[in-house]
Length: 232
Ligand SMILES: [Mg+2]
Image (cartoon, rainbow, N blue to C red; front, side, top):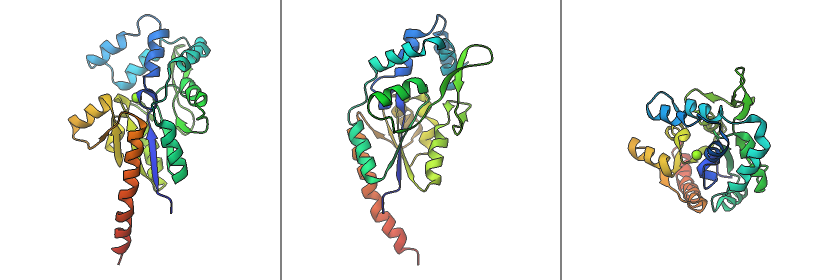
C-alpha cells in the first residue's frame, strides 16, 4: 500500500532560492509601494494588506516583461527535482501552495520542466477601482489574513486521507504550521516556529526535505501496524 503522504511546498524563497515576488515588486512597482512595509511594521497592515498594497503598484500591462524578469532570476532550490522524483515514485502527492502570483509561478515551473506539478496561486487582475489586485480561480479559498488559504490546501489533502508535510519560509506560511503533521521550515518561518513552540525541522535545500520525507515514511510503518494490532 503506498504511503498516504502529501507535501505542500511554498514557492517564493522555498521552492526558489530567492523571493521572486519581492524582486518583481522591487523592480516594477510604481513609486509609493514601500509605504506598505512601513504600515506593516507599525501594525496598520496585516500580511494580506501588505502584499495587496505592493502588487497594487505593479504595471499589469507589463506582465510579459515581469514574467521574463522572474524567469531570469528564479533558481529552484537544490534537490527539488530529486524530491519530486522520489514523491512520484512513492505515490506521494506534491503540490505548490503559493501566495505569490500565478503568472510567474506558472512560468518558473514550466521553464523547469514542472508544468504538470499541481499548484495553487492567486492571479494578478484588475480590481473594480482600476488597480491590480489578487484574484482567486474557482476552487481556491481566500484567507482574509494572508491571501491564498494554504490551510485549505492542507485540509483537502487530509480529507483525502493523507498526512501533510508543509515546507515553507515566510509570513504567509505561519497559519498552516498549526495544521501540518510535519513542518519543515527556514528563515522567518523557522523563527516563528521557535517563538511559538511549534515543532519543526530546519531545511537548507530539498535534499534535507527528502531526508525528512523518508524519515516520515519509516516512522509511519510501525505505527500503522500497531494501530492494526490494537483494533481488537
Ligand atoms: Mg515564501
